[in-house]
Length: 495
Image 1 (cartoon, one colour):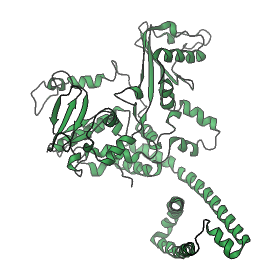
Image 2 (tube, one colour; image 1 turned 90 degrees about the horizontal axis):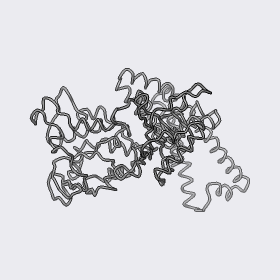
Image 3 (tube, helix red, strand yellow; image 1 turned 60 degrees about the horizontal axis):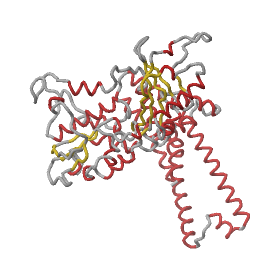
Image 4 (tube, helix red, strand yellow; image 1 turned 120 degrees about the vertical axis):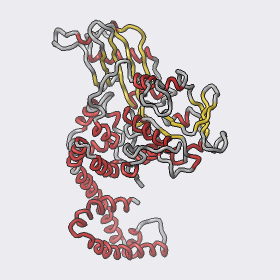
């Protein structure tokens, strides 16, 4: 398998690529001619193995039939040939990376022009090339960093990307990083007064106009008696304890059961196996595998309320603010400052961490976390007494310790593309076994943009289309849904 992989990687993709472009289909005759010799050599070696089996390789045959000197030469030639092959492979990797600037430039142009066909074509190429590559490996072999000392990559990892430092993303799939960069997910972010929960709260209360099936003034709140139902504890499929039929039974935490023709599951997918007693027949084995293989980013935040935005005070020695947003390699990693104006209470996020950095805080109480965070910040700002400005009790969260989350958001590792493709396309159920139909996944963790609201909206629309189809509905020809254009827009499938 190693030999086949090496031959395909550099022999066919790189070596034969240019030859095929110049010689055309006639190149197959050259491969066929050389293949005949390779076939007879390997066949002869195979017959020799069957005739005189031994624990050595073909070097032992050279020793038996031609003597020690021939065996010594054969072994060294074989070793040198593989050493040269390694050099060729490294050169091939470097050659591949020379194409990235042109590809990146073309992708950015396509995104700016909203050229969806070009975006999809370029992205599909990246999927095949980068699915198994980690972000760390990409950096280590990139043209920008490979010739520089490790300290440059280390410094870049600390402050190069977003909150909590970029080195926490080093194990991620390179595709995951490119999605954020190409999509501009870290750009032009806006603060929502009242918190991000204001969006679902307002949607819950919103009464749309021109309703087709309910009277004017109907909202989600009015349809549910003003309050959402209790947490789900068990969904049963048509083949489960609920009995046969095209319905799904849902039991809430209080034991109340209701039957629905279709269900949308928006929780973190891990909860379907770890916190919710889900009827296993609702999903196929490949989908359960994808759910269990989902990788979640660990994350932790700690907040304190302060009497005023004192960080805007001017240091007489430096002429600068006494405190600012701080990215560091200390325990806090990221410290952020939020205020509503002068002389009003303000907020400090003492620490925002990811992955291993977040796990360091997990066993500590909130008071111990704050003590260590203030100690770390004191080493950076020795003349600033942050503690004297704190009012009220600190608030902390570790998402991996929250029973309703078990992790902050999905974050793909190398090789996880196939799992996410199964989850994202789950709303297309026309070819599913009947026992697996009727329940649809939605949420950012089954989208291509884990951790971002766009992913939740995208998969939510997919699930709505799936429910509509399950109930026998159709979209308007003038406004096709995601399933209607699935063959055109579907993600590329890896074998």
